Length: 136
Image (cartoon, rainbow, N blue to C red; front, side, top):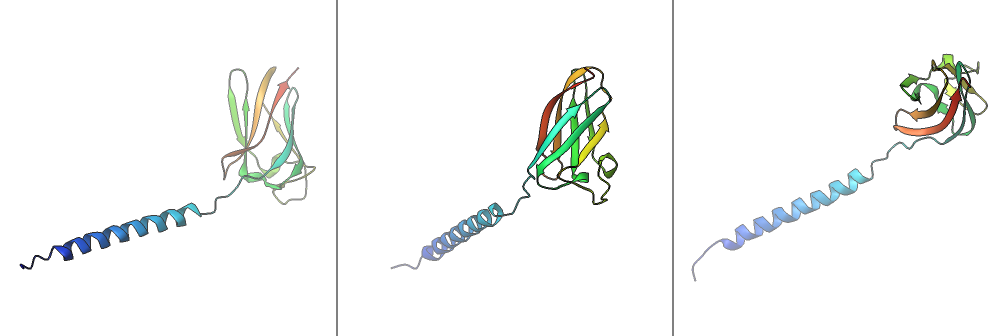
């Protein structure tokens, strides 16, 4: 019977296939368990008048003010602005937007209906939204 060494080659191919499969399965398991930051949950009341947009925190998670953007979509244009401590009505100085505090900002729109979105920038999730009537 001749020596043909085919069994060694087949064994190596099978071993490589098993290793690649195990590495693939482990990678999927490890990468699927990566913790993702979830968006905070807050109850926000959104109101507007002729000059100002007011967003009041009615309950839920405390929000880091600098993590928030406000998007105002009017009939003909959209404005986006970042929230900072200067927009908050509280004087506690903690940069947190929390229960009972309001965010007040001049909106710069004329008489129009507008959709307002409050976006949590780290997760790119909407944490509050509403429709307001400016100037009417």
